[in-house]
Image (cartoon, rainbow, N blue to C red; front, side, top):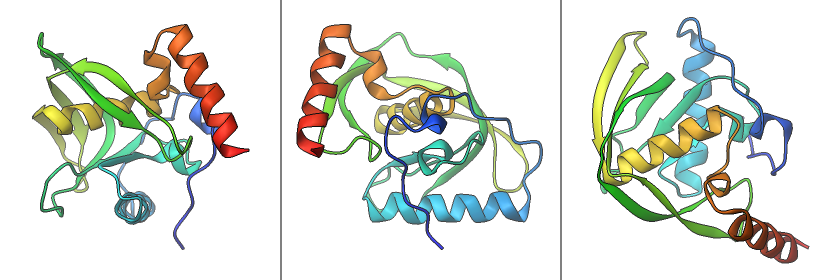
Length: 164
């Protein structure tokens, strides 16, 4: 059964997700569900809290051909680039709105993969942006939390109007 995304401000979206101790068949099933939801959106990433699951799990596939999904448990950023990029970000948890968000151009991330192995990976551009976006979700943050108070308030007001 494919889970639906939960609407903002669902409690899972504002809480810090719990670490994953070991990759089990349940975790593999959650990742598969997340990939199905991400592909159906279509999107380039999804974090478990977006489905109401309070675990530190994320998937990212920013490839043009698709099918290169990174399955990440407990992702953490080890290094960020000094170069900054702006890019459009959105979330299915708050539909119909988006914003330009400033993020590092590249990162080094460490995570546990689908085989239970610790991995380190250098990511750039959309791969880095989406990974950082998912890590924010795992820390109870939404992309609009990166905006100034004025821009955030305007975005939320617009979202309420469009969703009414």
